[in-house]
Amino acid sequence: MRHRITFFHRNEHGIEPSSLEIRDRSISGPDLVAVREHRVTLALEELPAELQELLHEIHELHIRWGTPQAHDSLGPWNSRLPPGLHAFYTPQTASAADSTRLCAQLRAAFGDLDCSSPSESFTKLPTDRFSHSTAFQYFQPLDTLTNLAIYAEQNAVSLDLSYDTISHAVKITTRWPEQHQELLIDSHPDHRTEVGILTPDSPPHLEPHELGVTGLLTVLGDDTKPSPVLFSFPSRHKDAGSTFSAAYLSPLGLHPTLQLRINFREPPLQDSSCSLHAYLTLPRTIFADKYQLGDELFLSSKNLTALRYISQPVDLEAPDYAMKLWGSSVLLELRPPNIQEDSPWTAEIPLHLRYLSPAEGGYSSINVPWPAVFWACNTEEGTKFVSSPFDRANLGYDGLFGPRTLFWHVTPELEGRGDFNHQIRVPVLDLKKTQWVSTGTAAVVLVGFAYIIFKLASVYWRTGHGSQKLATKSEKKKQ
Image 1 (cartoon, rainbow, N blue to C red):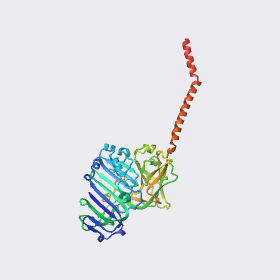
Image 2: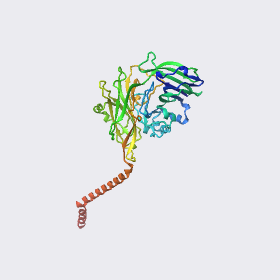
Image 3: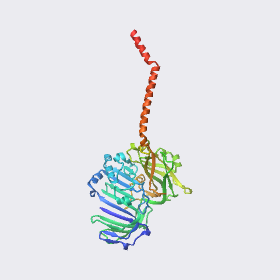
Image 4: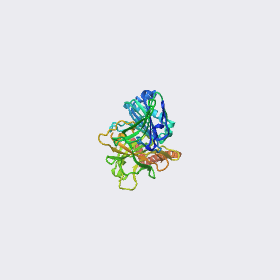
């Protein structure tokens, strides 16, 4: 097992190296204001037997969770996803996708998920476009990690779990937001534990797609004092330095419109090809109509450029309770604002609600996560994003772009209280009134059937078919 703990702080929140105390396999020092990341790497043989058997059926598995609570990004951790639980999966064989074991393990770890098997509950991803994409995707709104760990549920802002057959290792990464962090870490004799205290810097020859850092590194049990470091590494996700808000226009009805309001005017890179995007993960209770989003004139009126991707299939008529797929993911390119205009810039995304199961009171509530909004910029020819110690890939949308794409994320900003989930009240059939509906339906059917019989009988007797048959029989007897 390998354990890596990283504190990333702003320049003004640095601490003196002399204030750190290293004894045997522990390190301590004053509290510091920083983002904290823990990464644990486990070899396959270090896992429980049941989990080992499951992973033998899996070629690639990436689980991503993000909190719906507001938090700032810092350092190499600028990537964002719609809040909730995301799973990206490629089976070893086609038949493995029919197995229920993966969904059973997800339910055991994260609670009561609506997941039966990858072939039924996951959506397929377009692996023919770029080889770095997985084959299947699953999403479910999930506010907390109560079933996973109490400490993570209370404080963590994201959780990542990754496995692939090449490394034969599981990597679990948890991040906490920028706040006061206690600096007191002990390590196990059989585990390698590395502690880093880093801050942004600009090493010589820093490339535009790289992030430079400086700070202190310590390997507990090996080092007697922290080692100063200065290095750079590729950073595929960066902060665009702007914010956006999201809200549904009133009245909602059965066809709500999501409005995005963004407070910027210019793309992050002036000398590069950049396009603005919104990535949505929509539970199956709500969906986007790809045919409606295929009309260029309609898109232009909403400040949208094009529908770049929508997962398939998306049934436009089926009610929520008749579906097994988790929902759908949508990538929309937004039309960038005119830098000469001073008025607030907004884009509108039309969506549609499904019919839900009856409920008492005639209303049900659904949660729809905010989208991720970002600029996708092409880097120069020959740019290579080599392996980074902090790289975060397999986020769903990154598999829809080329390997040289740089993502500049727009930070979501709450305009009031709440979190990054929209709660929508949906009108449904009132359970208290369903008995009248069934009784009334039966009565209408019976009345209609009786009316049809009556009309047929009246026509039959009025046209004299009955008397004609009797007359024909008597004439035959006389002959």
